[in-house]
Image (cartoon, rainbow, N blue to C red; front, side, top):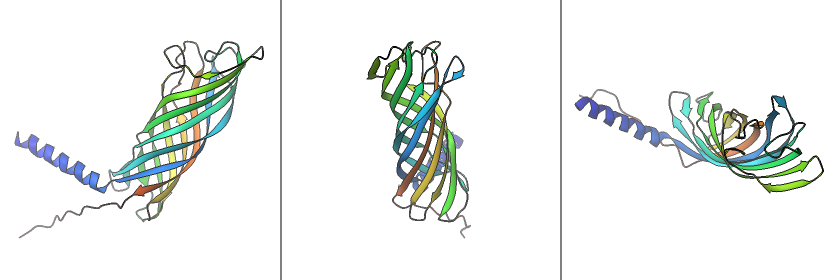
Length: 226
C-alpha cells in the first residue's frame, strides 16, 4: 500500500512539475489544400484551394530535446476535382466537383529542438484526427446541370472522420514567437459510400505563433543536506 501511495505521489509531483514547465501558445496561418482522389484505383485530376488554420498548442518537456506538443485547431480546406468515372458521392453523373470543408483537428505531436539555444530550429511530427464539421459542394453533371448544396455526411455519404500524419519544420525566437511550415498527409478517406471514391487530404501551410506568458522553470536542489 505504501509503495502504491509513493508511486501515485511521485507521479502526481512529476506531472505537476511538467505542467509548471510547459508552454501554451496560439498560432495561425495560410495553407493550400488538395486531395488524393481516386475512383476504382484511378487517380483523378485535382486542383488545390487556399484556406487557413487557427489554433492552440502546448509544449511539454519529455526528455532533454524532446517535447510532447499536442495541438487543437480549425482548418479550412477544399479542392476541385475533374471526374472521368462515375463517382458517388457526389453523383454518378458528375464530371466536376468543387468542395469546401470546415474541419477541426486534434494533433498528437512530438517536438525535437535542434539546439538548446533560446533561438533554435525544431521539427514536429505525429498523427492527427480530422473531424469534418460541415462543407459545401458545387458539382457539374455531364448534361451541364449544376448542383450547389451542403455536403451530406453519413454511412452512405461523406464521412465525418479522417486521419492524417503531420510534419512541421520551424524556428522559435527567444521572445516566444515561432514560425513553421507544415505538411499534412491524409491516411484515411473521408468517404463512407461503398464502391465510392477514396478521398484523402493533402495540405501545405505556413503559420506563425506565440507562446503566452513566460516559461516557468523548477529547480530542485538534490544536494545532500547535513
